[in-house]
Image (cartoon, rainbow over all chains, first blue to last red; front, side, top):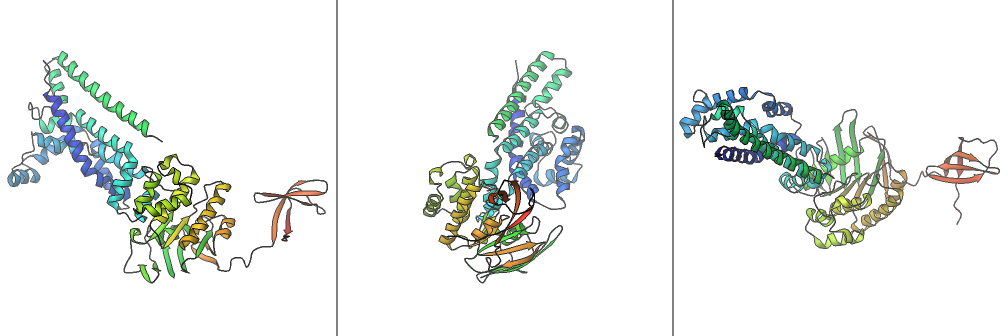
Length: 220
Length: 260
């Protein structure tokens, strides 16, 4: 009997992470694409770090930051009563950190590809930055928006290392699909591992192929 | 009266322009690439920071203590690459600036775009796009219309048509207009005053622009015939009486006389 709880958890985690990251990354990527600040490369580097760091390094630091031994963890637990280690909320926060570049980078590239004169025409027409963002910039970069959302979603569904370190493997709380497959292999239940992995491949393929089809359709 | 004291440090030149422009004037700016023409327009519209003083009809747009953003400058700007909102139809591009359906309809009918009002701008030709850009710039009823080489990407026939439309709209709206152009013919046809920029400074301010119009044509011999030669002047080709001792490639000066 297939237990769908890990899949459900994976998708719940991916959905929440994508939603939170989209809301937070939109103004950040807009700012990055517009700014001439000397700090821009520093922010870009911090954003890109999760791509190059081994998940174990990232997982270790997040685990430490969330634990009672760190000032942040102590503050969260003492003041707000929030315990992020080995909890679903902790997984969401960790996912937002390791999936950050997958949301910010396509959005920033989309903003940078926009015709600057088009945005300036909007300003000259009397419209502010917010109205220009929502009525001119975003509608003219739909492929970048979709890429950012789908790739962030897919990457979060597929994450393993950070999730295992921060969340562990608590059934129906932190045991997502990738962790469940790892455990099946460990106990040599290859048949179930095959079924779970097959489902993951099918879902990932469908998600990615839909992005490429959409992007092709929207190309001028 | 528009009083401008534009100063800005660029990479290789210092832009330093002092100009007074009468309301309703059609001013053309010409000069070599990199002489600061486009930057001048961008500073005037507030798109670029600078240490400038800009006063329009006794209202200060910019000085040491204040700087109005582009949104508050009552400017219309037509870019060379049209810069239309591709996610909107022709009509929506205009109504985005101001929800004035009457003016929108008038402008679209004047520029023969009314039939295309529901079309998305992606589907239009270069000439049509530039007319939409011009209409959009006029929708905000600007005090100054800035045109940055608006016709340079179009073919000769379309340019002429748009020059006539632009002239008509300038007259109709009595708009102070500043045109940046490389095309001398266009400049002389459209403007009432020509200012030439060189290395960020004014080289020549020609208020009486037809005073030094040349009465001779510099031509190049491109073909010899028995009793005549074919010469070229820009895109024009003439056949003239053969002078003595002339070879292909020689430069000649032709005197012009108007015969009615």
